[in-house]
Amino acid sequence: MNRTALITGASSGIGLELAKLFAKDNYNLVLVARRKSQLERLALELSKEYSISVTIIAKDLSLPSSPEEIFNELKEKSIHIDILVNNAGTQVYGKFHKTDIEKELQLIQVNLVSLTHLTKMAVAEMSKRGCGKILNIGSTGSFTPSPLNAIYCATKAYVLNFSEGIAKDLEGTGITVTTLCPGATHTEFAEKAKMQNTRLFGSMVMNPDEVAKIGYRALIKGKRVVVAGLYNKLLVFSLRFTPRWLVLKIGKILLSPKSGVII
Image (cartoon, rainbow, N blue to C red; front, side):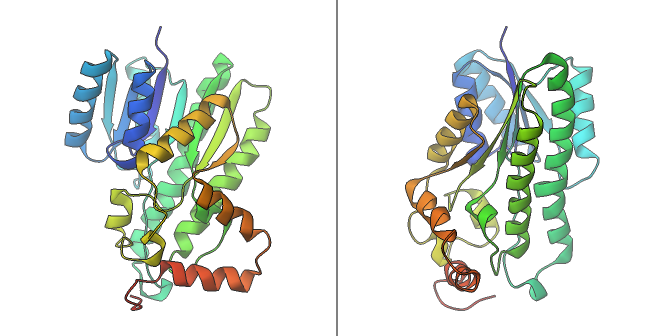
């Protein structure tokens, strides 16, 4: 009997590439995202190519009710989740005193609250069966505060600390928790946040399929934390020895537009 993976933010980027990897390994899929039409196209493509079952659930994770609604729908369809991938995320770029508070509250809901809620419900089900895997998507921003990206990096720091903490809590239960921490990646994510013209995205940018493969391998092996790419590994390692004031200064330079004009 095929195992089942639930992937949020599955309609594009890293989430889409992860869906392909799971499908290739004969996992049935539950794909969650806001854009139903894109989910339908992806479901048709994957089910035809790999002869797997693909269920789509169109939900906006910025709404507090969405996580519970997702699991209620799974219960109605008698679908049991073996792997949860919390990939959905959003971004608000710019100086804190100039950004939109409503968008920032939605960011916190998606990146932090919904991720926690989905994980809680998944663990409750997995613990009954004595097995399961969870992949949470962090960031190189999980390791450092950053001007122009303050709330996003704060939520990703939560993801890393939360994931490592519960991984220890869950020892002996058969459930593993892995955090994937990518750096700059070619996805719609940066484009929507209007970050593609920053210095951070000027070089050493990874493709989503590369990042997905790294995260997938780490998940299957049950690793706790994996940073995607050598450049990003070196960056994260260097933070241990860099004074905080310098980290903030470098962060502002990297996240500033190449033109030098900060919004």
